[in-house]
Every structure is written in structure tokens, then in C-alpha cells.
Image: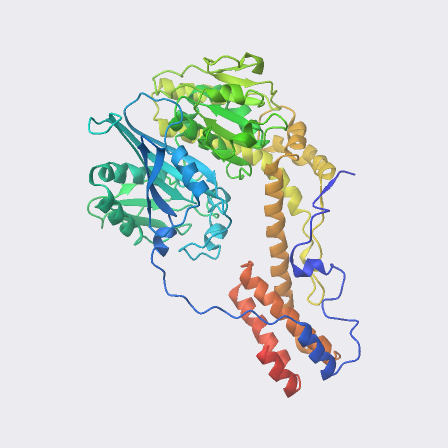
Length: 609
């Protein structure tokens, strides 16, 4: 038999800890009586008290979108320096400030003048901290997995300006405006920067304060809603994607435009990049890159600028949607980063990460990585841009390394030539870039779905039957995921049913099982199934005849039932189980009915407890 994934994992939830076969009520309880019941109550933990409703905090609406705004400037003596953090009371650790300073400027010498926009992602240091935004996880429960609010990382969205200025000692004005957020809304925040950064560089701090106050009036991002976000006399209109959206569906038609004067700036997507433009030089290798991302392979993107680097990394991480990319990724990374030593060491294998760099020094320090993608400046032209070639890693030695994919990786699946033909036809017909991007995104979506659907079908078969869920016993356990059993299903229900691509699908699955992406997918599905079981168990309890069950039970058993029902009710609300409010209300009434059947002294204790 194959290795059972999840067999050794810790059972989830209080019910699972007690084992599936054990009676839910204490069937082996000793002699009944108030004394034994009192003992059971004394051992039980008191119910948590509901906190008093807090009044809305200042900056709570701002914090729903952004953690802070930073201004980074170039100081002749200090180098990059943090000039301003707003709101003033937002606390970044010194390590975070240093990282943001270095990540907000181009790493290698850039003689180019003007404005540049790019993104970065950095690891939060200093542990969990309080935020003005009070969110009980509702956003993450309703948002697509790929758009969840980060808990351990910050995104930085940068607008960097470098212009000649004779009044500065260095002869240049160099400054970056940085939006720091836990939300991966690259399109929204870069569009916002295009509006506010030029104004800020002209009018400085008062302008920034006014903008932050406007953002503090925005409604919070609620998945499924279309929002109007006013800033500097303009209204940005966006739709926040929801987990229930059909993958690949076009954004829901925007509304309320007729009432808005001036007409709003409508963003078709808050996060999707122009994939066709990003993948221009590697279009014929998109399938190889999709496989590398699926398997969580370590990849270095070497680019001429932070803009190209960050866009390519974000495009790569998005190409698995709706599957969540569960590895680390750094759209832009510098030699000053605190993880530099961790990533460049040769004493251990490179980590599962996609890292974007611009400094030529990385060619030397990262040449032991298994996959290196070197790209030039992205240029939109009438013809198919020159496609990079796959080359051996041994050729990656000189500082003037030519563009290419430096790898010894052999793809499991055969190349899909029809995609390239369709994209070429689009170029000849001068099809808009967004249409080409939609074609490319649709192709990647269908590829990912063909790969994931057999896994979804198999894991669904591990769920216990609904008739096996009885009210007075713990819910049965989810059966373990056995790789060999899954492989046997592929002959009749494999990707060939939905995908024309030939190749070694079995080999691709075997390699996928060793990747963090499989681990992340499995953990998420197992959690959802465990919560579904808990919900079905609560429904079974609601439909049971509780009075009949109580007839031959001792007081200690009845008290134990009350405590366990209360525990289930608290867990259902805390974990936001998929249970109707009516079901929870009925369980509450059951508890009251049971308590009322007990002697008055026990009633008093239970009501107080």
C-alpha cells in the first residue's frame, strides 16, 4: 500500500481527539447523582465571556487596506533612509525598516531618470502585533485562497522617482513612496500610487496625510462586492473577488456609474497582471514554467529592473490559480536582504522559493540554483518577441549572460503547440493585449483544473457517508490519503478526460506529492472536510430526540452532555463552521431544555457556569 498522507498528522478538533468509536456521552459513567455531576462541572473549563463591543478605532478602515505608508529617501551619509511612516503610531521593527529601505530603491545602478513602479514582499519580523483593523478572519474565509490577507508577510508597492535636481548635493532627487499592505492587490495599489505619488512629490506631507484620511473613510474590502473608493477627487471602482466566483469568469459588470460624476476609474481586476506582456519572452516555455511552479521548484528570475523582476515573479505565482501557490516568493530581492545568506548558501539545497533579482552579482552567488530565468526589458511589439532558449546551467558563468532559461529540467507533459498558434494569430490580427492575456490565463486555468480535478474527486471519496454520522457518537474519521490508491483512479478518471495533452501525468503527480503545494492543498481540504463533519454532526444532534435519550441517563451523563454541547457550540461559532444559524439556535434551546430537567442546585451551577 502507498504511504498514507495525513496518517501521522494530529487529529483536528476536540471530537477527533477522543476517537471516532467512543460514545459521545460518557456511556461508562459511574453511579449518577448530584455529587458526581458537580465533580464533572468543577473539572470543566468555564465558558469564555464575550468581550464588550469595542468602539471603532481610529485608522481601523485604513488598516483594512493598508498597514502603513512609508517614504524612503537617499541620504548622502546614510544611504537609503526612512523619512516618514504614516500613520505615525504604526510600529515597524528596525529590521523591517531596514528591509523596506533597501527594497524601495533599485538594487543595481540605473542611469534611467523618471518614475518606476514595482513590488516586493518581505517576511514580518518581531512576531504577531496588534492592528487597528479588527478582523475575525471573515475576509479570508470568503476571499479566494490566492487573495488572502497575509499573516506573516508584508507586500510593498513602490513608486520610485529619480530626477536631476541641482539643489541636491548629489545632483539628483531620489525618493520612493511605498504602500505597505498584507493584501496582494497589485493592480489596485499600483493604480493608487499613479494618482497619489506625483502629487506627493510636489506637495509632500500634507498631501499624504489628506490621502490617508480619505482611505480611512473607505468601506472594507468585502469579497463579492463592488466598491467605490474616492481619492483626490477621483473614484476608483473595483470588485473584490469572492471564493464562490466561477474560476475564469469575467469580472461582474460594474454598477452605479451613472450616478458618479466624474465617471469612475474602473479597474477590471484588483490583482491580475497583463500575463501576455509579462510572459512575452517565454511564451513557448509557459508549460515548463507552469510545471516548475506546480512542483514548487526553486527559481531565480534575473531581470534588468525591479519592474520586470516583480512582474515576472507575480505572473509566475498567479499561473496556478485557482490552486494556491504555497511556497515563498520574493518579487524583488536585494543583496542587503536579511535572508541573503539563507538563499545563497551552498551547504544545503536551495529553498522552495521564486526570487526576483536585478543585481548581476546574483549570477555568481545563485548559479547553484537548479532553474534560472534570465529576461531582458519587456517590449510590446507587432511581432512575437524573440523567445528565450532553454540552456544548460554550465553556460551561466559570465556577467553578460544572455537571456534564457538555464535548467536541466525535462518536462513531464508534451508542449501544447495550439496555444502558441492561437497567440501568434492574435499578434498577426493585432488583437489587444488583454484579449491575449485572457487566452493565456484560460489555458493555464484549464491545465491546472485538469490536474486538480482527479485529486478533488479522490479526496471527496475519503469523506465518511452521511448516514454514518450519529448524534451520540463522535463523527467518524476522514480516511487517510493513500497515494497508490489515488494513482489507481487515474486510469478511468485522470486528466485525460479534460485535457488533450499527452505525457507522463503519473510522474508529475508523484513529484507533486513531494511539493509544498500538495501539502498546502491537502491541509486546506482536510480542514474544510473536518469542519463539514462537525457541521453535519450538529445537524444530526438537532434532529435527534433528546428527551428520549435522557430517559435512562444519570445526572453526570446529562451534565457531561450539556458541557459537550456547549463546547461544540463555542467551536462552531469560533471556527465559523458551515452551519445554519437556525441549527445553532436549536442546539442552544436543547441545552436549555436539558438544564431545565435537572435539580435546581445543578441548574443554578450550570446557568452560572
